[in-house]
Image (cartoon, rainbow, N blue to C red):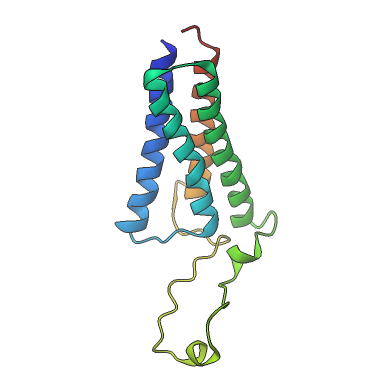
Length: 154
């Protein structure tokens, strides 16, 4: 397989993961936690690398895409550890921030403060693997695909 093809397949995989995450957010109504959001940004980088690869399928572009997928896998691994209680998450992930909310609003049940989404609770899983876990598996696979593209002759 040619480098460009591998790069476009990997970029399409990242785009698919982003679309899946947005689908869960907006159609299944599972709001993301802060770590879920962080896992999305590196895939944006990978998709942009795929757009560049259409015109310039260079090894450096493949490495940038691979870095994006690998970064998402690493953040996802951290998130899985938080979900499994292997380590503590960030303070912003395990408690809802009340910064900027008045005492009156905090005590008023009629005020909608929005959903509190915790990083240490599993919102959805399939065959015993959480969304963060699936992101680790799929993102690591995409990172390997990007690396194969970088090592492939044009």
